[in-house]
Image (tube, rainbow, N blue to C red):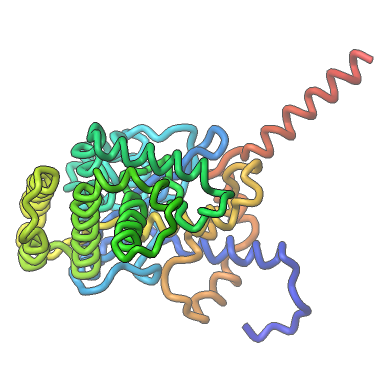
Length: 372
């Protein structure tokens, strides 16, 4: 930036980040240039607040090959609320973009988001990750084999993690979104089956893994299914959803005819039919991975101090987006004042959890002094 400065403090760098984040937001007129696809999500609870994030992507980019990147994104809504009702979501989106410019919206199947898009009279595309997770859950949630398998893995972890058999201990299972993360458990099962077949395990290890034998066919069949589903997601995330790639995805089920596979396949075909009816012959995006990535990077930044709650540091999400053109960054530093940062914070963040705690403690101190 050709500035004759000493090494800036961390506070200065934070302020630059916030300024750059604010500069990424565009006027409502900017979005009149073309059609847009909106991707929306809300963060997990930070204290008593949730962060609503809506990003805009040019529709033409969503029909091109390749998963979306941060460069493709323009922040539309970045705002904190105690809860986000569908009417509030619609009001925020409508404040920033003419709804006639929105081609379709992508999100998970959260009730408030899906209702918001319905109120907007906008096509809603269910994110493929969450959709596949719901399909897997509907088929396997009450499956006795899966229940027996996961219980045996849990027992094995608790008994053998610090023993001489620690090398055969299975990976931990995520409690949240567990049906989105079954593959590592079944990949481990396949490895153990192979090691037992090659006689590479000790007698004690074989005894500890004796529960696998009656579940061998179930493990093999479920692993094959999960791998196929991952391949389908990879295809559709990288090439978009179209008739061509839908047919390519369907062919991956060839030769798989178990009861569970057929149940999953039926629901996936229903999902594909739903997407086909909304695509109107175009290639569309069906993944919200990019917004999950934005939240993931933000949570990584603030993980050391969650007690603060959601602050204006969330502007780092907006700062991640768009092209990092040096002229644009220089302009942001020159035109976005700290007063604008304070104004943005007032309109979009309100009080942080930390500020609420400070305010409460001040009242306690005053009361204590007055009593004494």
